[in-house]
Length: 450
Length: 162
Image (cartoon, rainbow over all chains, first blue to last red; front, side, top):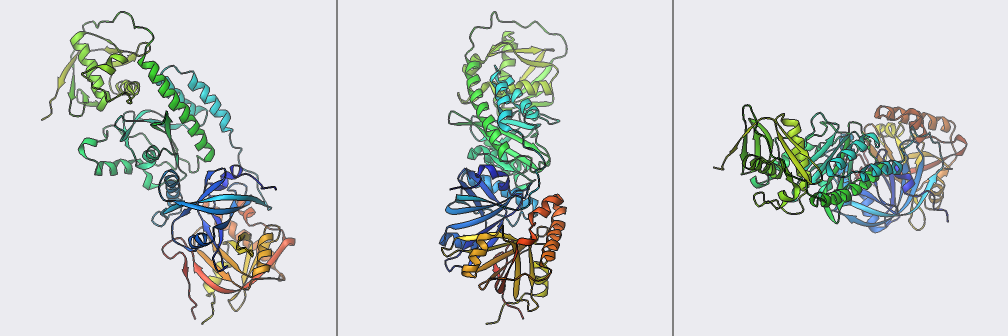
């Protein structure tokens, strides 16, 4: 039997750009037809429809699970009829969250943010797809071959020997190969409650070191539910600032987010896509891209980014092991020569491990504690070179645990120093080794908590 | 029981450049659905005729012939205003003079409504395109009318008003 085109082949029809008509039939034989804003692709054999109101469609499918949907291709106007069988409703979890975010974008675009609220994701099995004859127009543009581009990008990632290079290649590749110039990588804090920006591309200020709460906003929801979240229109419910403010309003003092460093996102992203970075069964972070254009990211881009995030996750884990197990010793330790000039006052607040250079805030948390330790060793022992391994086992640092990505914290620190200080430079000097370079003397002041 | 009658304003709405989708069902109550390409309402404001392209609506035409049940949804994209009409006596009727012109005018009116939303004209026209020689007319007596504009009143049955 010819079942017509595959569901994969008609995914552009499932972007929510053009409403679909859904027909159902009640127990008494009365047909019902209504328009739906979202027919969501679940997998090659299933779609999900948004359940927002308890209406006739809902009543009908509970009594008679058969539905027929009429879809239009948003570029060509090709028509398809889907024979569907209602299977179940999901009211929480990854599918629900993906649809909820997508619906928020659709509702916001339609000026109906207050009206559309997802109550459930109704999952239907696709029994048959029929292409309906009729006038078509040629598609405006040919879609890029994402698998070919992902292959290019994977080769670039495979050539990276350290985490800093990996993050840089990933973001440059997103911009150059996938034409996604606004992108950022956030990693999960060892406490598992927040994400910190470790690298970004395409923003006036990198925002490296800024933090984002888990479970809120597009990035936090993608992380919490380990699922891609994609929005095709500007949606205020998913604004970055809103997520951060809501978190701060509710969070206890012990759970404060970094707020001194501004989050790097666009003020008005009309397209957003967040995908979880997963490896070895763990959530490592989130890869996030955005655009000022609506409908910039579709199902293909989502798949592509999920593939990229998988490569990134596996590479992060692999490089972490390499970084902590240097093949050889770095040679004779380098001792610092005495410096001339006015000393730079460096203040350290152990309460939250925050560091100030003169009057300027630099960083806090794990990276702040590491920096203070490096400076202390530099002043007390005149040392300039350090190894990742000694930092990891340093009793003065008490690093959270092995889950925390020390290498990522060091990249963060390095980047913040590069952005905020002309007097102190932190460099890599060989695998798993660091060099601290000072251009003027420092005066260390530890400020005890009152 | 008073009979359902459309108001003049409702008639103007469903005869304007709205998107039209029609549904029926077979003997096993499997629903069928197709786009309609035009609509006209008789002077009594109860007899409603929708035009379909038979190459696109084969199953729907078959189902209507077998059961007479028809549901039709009308929606104006620019305002989201949506109405659903139902009838129990739907049947194929001969085309009236000017039906092909009516469908052509409808196609243009729909495209006009869609353009400000950012769609290109060829696409907008294609969505409600038809072959004049394959047009068929389905007529039914209005039995039920529902407000379906997204919002708190969506799904509300509209009662006869006289």
